[in-house]
Image (cartoon, rainbow, N blue to C red; front, side, top):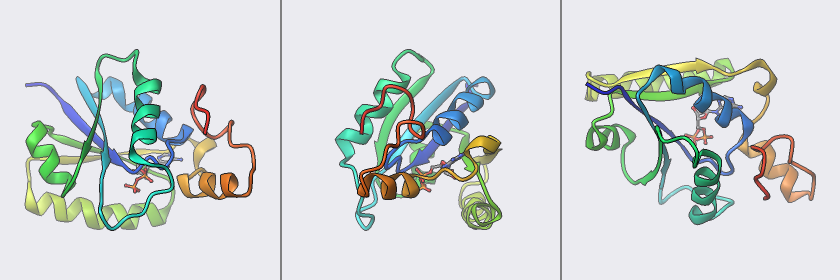
Length: 152
Ligand code: ADP
């Protein structure tokens, strides 16, 4: 049985922190689905087509990574993709508290899916999409925070 993991997120925009988690997780799984969750109630800064384009651009050489979008519950998406794992990155204790609640609820709803957490690499501990968006709003240079080749 293939080990398939879903890495869900908004990727608004993708950062080097996301990229690092994805690359570090790849050896653990046979396939990794990087999935943009489309939540009607969440206004994003970048449109979906841009966020998708960047993900494709970054991971186009990696045959074991698939880029998808989904609506609804992440756990239902995992089920439809026959994925046994949800991958999440942890930066801070606040991330942990947030993820613990979701992870444990998911476990109750669908016990076969395990949530796997990777501690973020130390150099990316303070990096978040929201800070990158703030820098962009104020016309700052974010090139060191987003994957190479991504022009925002
Ligand atoms: P969400 O809206 O689901 O939080 P994000 O795109 O912000 O989506 O994040 C997706 C995942 O990437 C989450 O597990 C988040 O903790 C993780 N992540 C975000 N930034 C970093 C970072 N700098 N280092 C490691 N993981 C990160």
